[in-house]
Image 1 (spheres, helix red, strand yellow):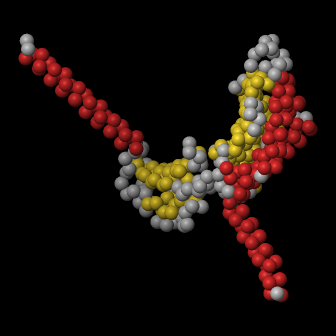
Image 2 (cartoon, helix red, strand yellow; image 1 turned 180 degrees about the vertical axis):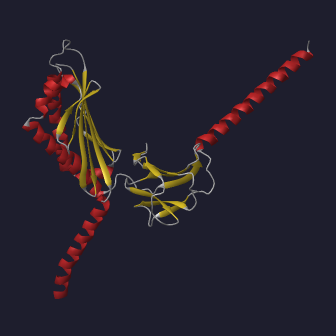
Image 3 (cartoon, one colour; image 1 turned 120 degrees about the vertical axis):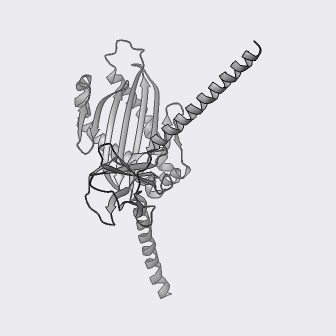
Length: 340
């Protein structure tokens, strides 16, 4: 019995430690949450209000004024957030209908045509890395033109259109400043942490890597390394020569950018001086889905660029079709000559 009593608290503590490490492992990546609010109204009434939420470029939920319900796109997210949280969020969005109409009415108060429709948009995004907020922005758009934006790290609204100056003081008021900070932390950062701390919104995928080399007209050698189709966002590409790090030429990077399928890609190039033969270079790739850093040797011979190959194929097809067309015309002409 004494042994059992001692084991229980130890077991609970051990499970808690495992859960913490599992949560850290899930959060130990870059994540981004984007919220898009679009309202359409006249001076008299709010006609439409739609809200869409994306985590890591995957739509997770939406809301519209007609149904007044939050539509969850991924079933397990309901479990991650809980019924109480979703209900509170839904009630808040219903209340926001009045707030959006008030804001739209305020912006359109000098409108000469009271029946004209206006569109207002609020775009909010935040990013975390290893569970820590690293970026946060808000954009306010009126009838398709961005009027204001703010970088939360800077904390100062930037007015992008002269007509927006008259409302500048409203955005800087203590009430709206406190509301903005509270909402961005509560519904952008904390909501995202709840979701990614429970489960990734998509499966992790290792990168597909291609390495090439070609000689430019000036005689220098260009080495290219492209990693694409990977998730999560964090990745490291580097050049090594004969297994060693160093600086051998001009290095450029595309930066990690999104693909249409919510995965990412990164393109890295190295321009070597003409006196460098380009031999012995490798592209080393590190990603959470690779057990060890992957090494990709650079081809010894120049690689045929994809666009050159595609152009050659296209020209060959055009030539073939032209020859076939000429043969058909020639054959028809011969037949007509036989009946003359």
